[in-house]
Image 1 (cartoon, one colour):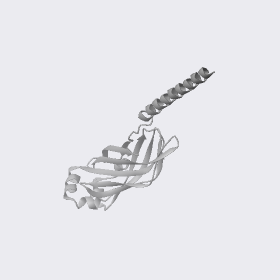
Image 2 (cartoon, helix red, strand yellow; image 1 turned 30 degrees about the vertical axis):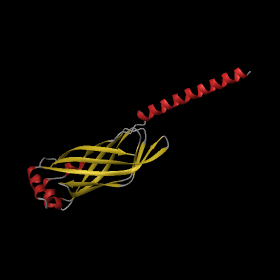
Image 3 (cartoon, rainbow, N blue to C red; image 1 turned 120 degrees about the vertical axis):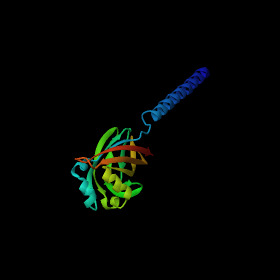
Image 4 (spheres, rainbow, N blue to C red; image 1 turned 30 degrees about the horizontal axis):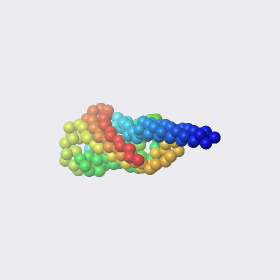
Length: 189
C-alpha cells in the first residue's frame, strides 16, 4: 500500500512538472510571437493639396487643406487614443498644425483618419529660406505627433504612446499641387 502511495505521489509530481513546463513554453512562445509589440504603419495623403494654388502661399495668411492619415495596426490588440495635435514645422519652426480627434484603431486592421491641416503661409513667407523654396516650386515640411492612449490585448489594458514623424514634400509649382511623404512610427507601452 505504501509503494502505491509513493508511486501515485511521484506520478502526480512528474505530471504537474510536465504541465508547468509545457505551459511556460507556450506562454513564452506567445510572448515572443503573437503578443510581440509591432510599430504601426502610417501613410500620409495630403488630399486637399490639389485644390490649392501657388498664389495661395503668396497671398493668404493661413491655408487649410484636408489630410488623410492611413494607419495600419499590426498588433493583436486595439489602440484607443486621445485627442492630439500634429505639429507641422519648416526648418525647425512651427508653421502649422493638424488636430486629430480621439478614436480606436482595431487590432490587426487599417483605418483612415481625415483631418484639417492649417498652414501659416505668412510665417513661411517671413523665412527667406522658405521664400526660395516656394519660388523653386517645392516645400519640405515635417509633421510630428504623439498619440497617447491605451492598448487592449485580450481584455488587458496598458497605457501606451505612438510617436510619429512624417517628412512631406509639397510640389507647389505643379498644377494641381501634389505632395509626397515618408513616415516613421514608434509604439511604446
